[in-house]
Image (cartoon, rainbow, N blue to C red; front, side, top):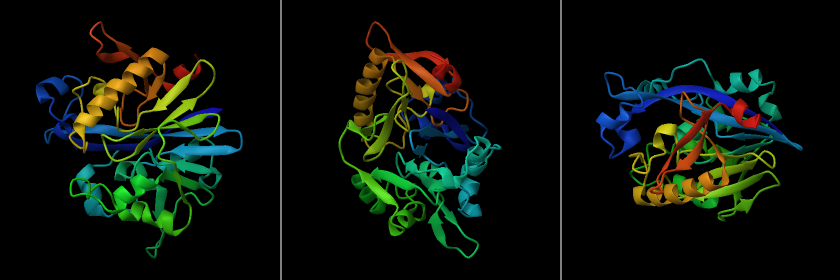
Length: 285
């Protein structure tokens, strides 16, 4: 299996929103905020090449939104989805499957592209796209809290083009011999956490927005964006305990400085970061 991180560039979000009830006096020691209280986060997808599949997990923001949209999130950095995939030695047409962890705009924006005449179409012409039916319906009929994050132009064209398929709503569904689908319900309804078996020694969890950065491992560090923070707390406790016990590696989607981490539990059963590694260092294990 070849496994390659894909750099989709960076964007900015409010520090308070990213850390919820944790006060700035604590989180600002870990990540600096600018004069507008905004912190810079990355958008890191993952490309997997194995057997007869080339799988992409998440697609970043894309570039089809208007100037007003981008003025709110301050997209920056050199990385883009297309350039990073090509730099890895692939074309968009090589992608066979796109797993979308959830439909918030910073995870699904690059799944759909726009032509000069305004036509929306799947960005990966030969790919099947994957979510769960429960999440699709949740995003299609959004609640007031998430409405601004679920932009229908990012995912409805996939359904209309007939390229969107659904995983069963089954926590632990084995998609193939390498990828198992784990589900989470605190951040949003039915978010996918792909569990990727690299070999007998290495399993990687694509942590999506359950653990968006190394700064979010501590149990109270829950994003203000989460629709069910107490569910997130329970899920973090359960998942991190299991991942620490099994020695799994977490691949971080939004951490600018750290690609992967391992988890350790302290003598009171609280999770913390053990190792910080690059993906290349993980694969060398």
